[in-house]
Image 1: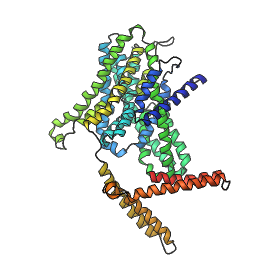
Image 2 (image 1 turned 135 degrees about the horizontal axis):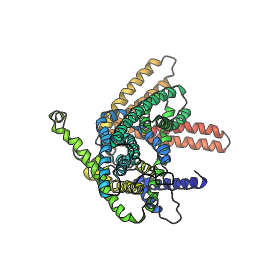
Image 3 (image 1 turned 90 degrees about the vertical axis):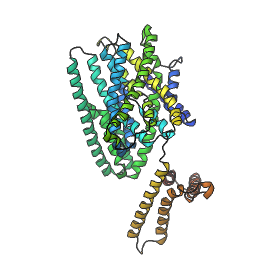
Image 4 (image 1 turned 30 degrees about the vertical axis):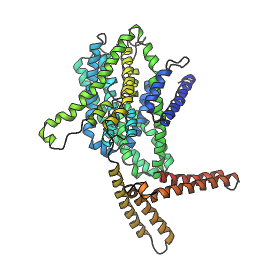
Amino acid sequence: MNDTDFRVLLAVLVVALAVTALARRYALSAPLLLVVVGLGASYVPGVPIVPLEPDLVLFLVLPPLLYSAALESSTLRLRENLKRISQLAVGLVLFSTAVVGVAAWLLLPELPLASALVLGAVVAPPDAVAAASIGRRLGLPRRIMTILEGESLLNDATALTLFRVLLAAAMTTTVGAGTTILSGLEEFALAAVGGVLIGGAAGWLLHRARLRLADGALESSVGLLVPFAIYLLAEELHTSGVLAVVISGLYLGHKADEAGYATRLQEQAVWKALDTLLEALVFALIGLQLRVVVDGLGDDATRILLVSLALLGVTILARFVFVFPTIYLPRLLPRVRARGPALPWRGPFVISWAGMRGVVTLAAAFAIPAAGPDSPGMPGQSVVLFAAFVITVGTLLVQGLTLPVLIRRLHIRDQGGHGDVLDEAAVKQAAAEAALARLDELSDETTPETVTEQLRAWAQHRANSPWERLGRSDDELGEAPSLAFVRLRRAMLHAERQTFARFREMRRIDEGVMREMLRELDHEEAMLDR
């Protein structure tokens, strides 16, 4: 990357973060707004062409985003919904590849079937970043969110492996179809099994190392390197780097309670900031590709655009055709019906509609070799690239803009709020009792009574706060004691900070001393926010 490329990328980052801030300020979907702004900016005079580099996305962007999502995912909930997630992450990817590929071959006779199937593999994996941001904001039920997030964690491995196999078949004429399919199945099995083994082993080793380091800053620094190192190692061993990163992230996230508190606080802040930066960059880059893909079409742009729009419809419809039968057809069997009532149709409908494509689709499309002096390239490369772009942007705008309306109209909201508070209240009460019992064990006649009384009061305060939320409304009861405690303590913390700053200006304390004392207050306020 030369100086000009670096300046352009930095400018894209600055603008993308500004657009993200604007979207959050007005409660808009940041990914969708970034795509729209990028589309408009791509034809503004003076805006340079910003090609999307596949290596940049597949190595520097995809691993940290998947790793961060895996850290925050619930391994237990994913395991409970593994059957449904596997159907989407494997079965739906294969189904979408075949349906879209055959449709493209029929609509574009000049496109070889192998190249058409490459297009199918490219657009097969949905990206749940946009769908998850909308779902969390509108309160989608937890099970639907788990299925969508689990699918996005695992489907990239299926799609990218399938893409490599089909691309190799599209660029060679010396290997028979049967041999290609057989070798493809062998490669997929090796990539999947190897990715799981490498990810699991790496996660186990890193967790043991994390427990021995006992240094929050060092642990967080190592954590930043983890997704890149694991991805590179797995890819060098010809397995799935995506799957290895996801498995290691799931393991380390599940074991996070055994790490130090400083590591958890720092990692949460670091990964949130990095996610925001990377997501802003990739969705802005998606929009900026319009001029790049249009310039490669030539004089047949109108017909290819119409065909691409038709393929957009096929891509959206294929998800419905797969999701509903896989959920409801097994209920024709009596033993399946005996397990419980059928799922309401609204949930599968939202899952079917939340199939927005994203940066992985475009990264794969841009990785297809074009014809050049040293290589014939893949036949139909420019057509596949343009169709992938139309499908990606089309799903982001059509489905992304209508998904919030759909969720509201269907009244699909997480109804577990009261139950969650009740569970929290019960477990906090049990935890307080265990903490007080431990306090009694450790206290003796030499322990100051004021210390034990303060600890008892704090434990009881934490146990009471969720019970208060289960009671009457604030209008009936007035301000809850826990809310009053937080309000007053925050005011006290503000007064303490002002005193520290005043003493620093008076040269009564050193700058370093003040920062240490501020850090103590910041930790306490972070606990109050929680």
